[in-house]
Amino acid sequence: MDYRTLFSDRRWRNSLINKMKAYIKALSYYLPDTVLTNAKLVEEFPEWTVEKIANKVGIKERHISGKNETAVDMAVKAAERLFEENDISKDSIDFILFCTQSPDYFLPTSACLIQDRLQLPTKIGALDYNLGCSGYVYGLSLCKGLILGGIAQNVLLITSETYTKHIHPRDKGNRTIFGDAASATLVSAEGKIEIGNFSLGTDGKGAENLIIKTGASRNPTKENDLNYDENGNPISSDFLYMNGVEIFNFTLDTVPLLINETLFKNSLHKENIDLFVFHQANQYIIDFLRKKLKIEKDKFYIYLEKVGNTVSSTIPIALYEAGKEGRLCGNICLAGFGVGYSWGGVILKCNFEKTL
Image (cartoon, rainbow, N blue to C red; front, side, top):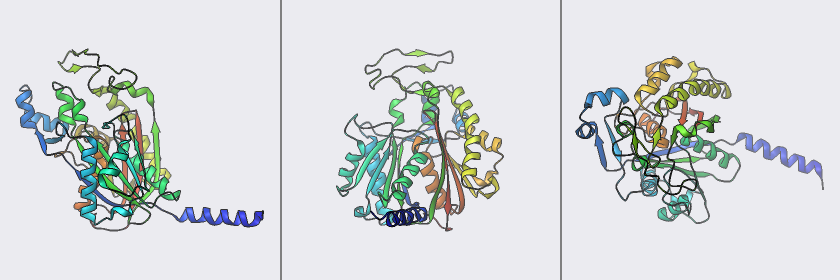
């Protein structure tokens, strides 16, 4: 073997990889037809008012998936909308990444079902990954890895959640916050929104603070252990449980460090960022974060009022709406954080001043 040739080939390949980049090329999203307004919630919880809910969480309405509508159903609709709005050929897709915590089945993999429903080529790769509010940022990191590794050229990244199916009907706190939605993003080896460097983190010690305890392998049968706390809020192993105080404390401790590390890894300072797009948890939390980080209001994008907290879809929905307003330009800092605990940040570098 001629080792000089081998090393030369390796240097050429490494040089090529260093020149390769990944881009967000197109975005779209889908919302279910059913709308739950604050007025409807007040009918169920008359101790609250429309204004109190809006002022507390910054949400006026949220969309609820239909009784028989699943995360895969919504994913397919988001992807079809992406293809239609952006004139994307299905034959160009060579990988599907699907982020959900609400799969249709334990098996098969939901991404395989999506491939079939969309009639995409059978030569493509497809897999699911289970993450919540940081899921979109993690998805972008996986897409970038697939592209820079030469495995794919056009990755279809889909997020879809039906959290509202896991919330107890009397859980007014979580019902005011969460909505259902799906997003679809085309991540490509070419485009104008370059995906920069990532900062990612995990701390499984916080798992108990945002959890559905039954239904999977650890606790396969329902506990039927419904109780109420001192404020009359339902607590049950069979429904979504969120310890709001602990989640708030985790967010305040983690996100400022995440932003600093994300900026550092991209050789940027806070002043270099044109727009911050955080996971849209609720108005109170993200406002608190903005003030703690001393970010100007006009550089901090919020899109909550009409959709609520859609978990892994909040960031792509916000990006889509920011694009419609012509605000996707310069450096954009994304930050996702939540269930797990899990968190992730990345910088997008936009080379244009127009909508997606």
